[in-house]
Image 1 (cartoon, rainbow, N blue to C red):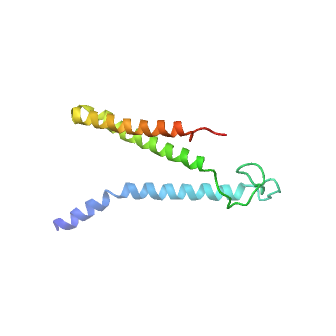
Image 2 (spheres, one colour):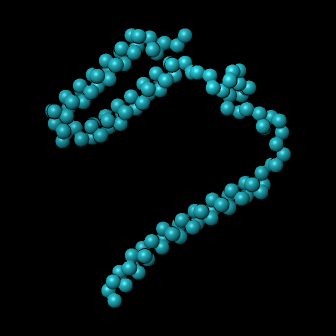
Image 3 (cartoon, rainbow, N blue to C red):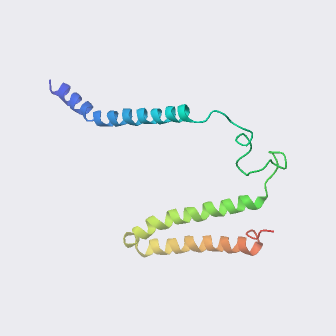
Length: 127
């Protein structure tokens, strides 16, 4: 008898989550249906035209990109990861001690050296 009451008690804890889930799905379905019902259904030529860049593409869609786009993207990822490492390090600086401090200084030095190298080589200069 004790195991049955524990199982029912455990299931009853999930009832508010299920109610919330049903309300969220129902409300989302209602809004999608109302948008479909009340939205205009007469597309014209301007609505069907390309909208990402505002004009028809000049070249074939499989043309190559300039390598500088990739370099900037890689730089963004590197410095984004740097920030992802710096925040937890700064929060726990008192626990990691002097070894953790100098480890991060070496890490930042390596990143700075790589950035200076790319800058010197002209990878960041747009023509």
